[in-house]
Length: 278
Image (cartoon, rainbow, N blue to C red; front, side):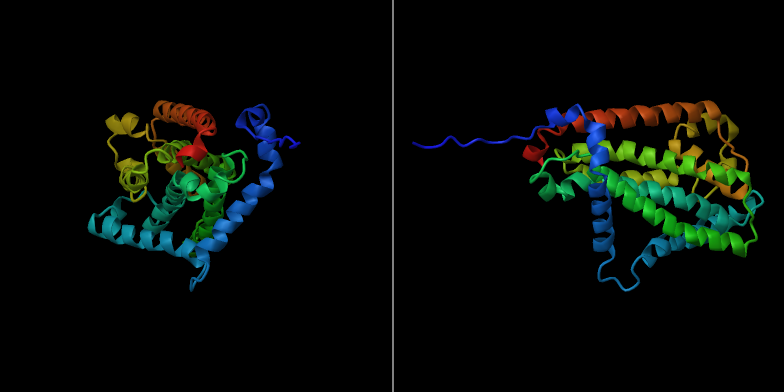
């Protein structure tokens, strides 16, 4: 007589009731995936994590030469050295761009893990964001050195930096979650993401101050959530006034929250069928 073989099936439905608790219980997995990505990223490289500082530094130099010198924006810099004006905006932009790029492909690139065991899939995008936050902290060392060179002493506004970093991270996670979830079905989005980021670089006040934007258009310009974040960084680090249209900034923050919550909802919705389409 053959003994009946029992099969244990782990379904997301059971996890759904304790999703946040499971995320907290498996926080070590998040740290492990993040550390793994850091090690793989800089393995067998000549300068290692120095690339984190080299990339924004080279971009800052290019912006200084093209926008500052050739376009004459350096003369319109509002009372601060132009390289410092650019680099203080380059840090949040680099965090946003790297996070969106890594989160958008995180599910597809970790398909071999997703297909073997169930865990809250949100851990994978969060681990990608964790890596970008580490890069952000390392690149911030250049900013500290530049502030010493230019004799810039920050004020009490520096206390707002953690909230501004949280805003940039939430914005990147909001967009990245939708791109990551949709990329599992439509792989063309992985090719579209760099174009979106390239366009976003030039419509965000990275190489210039919002002071050059005509006042009658600042309401429209402020709908870009990165405008408030970047100007906030300059306010916190350099003490510059925030030349933004606050009602538009409020609308952009509400949109970020809406996109983030809807992205979380959609990711949870497709978790059950993720293995079949990835």
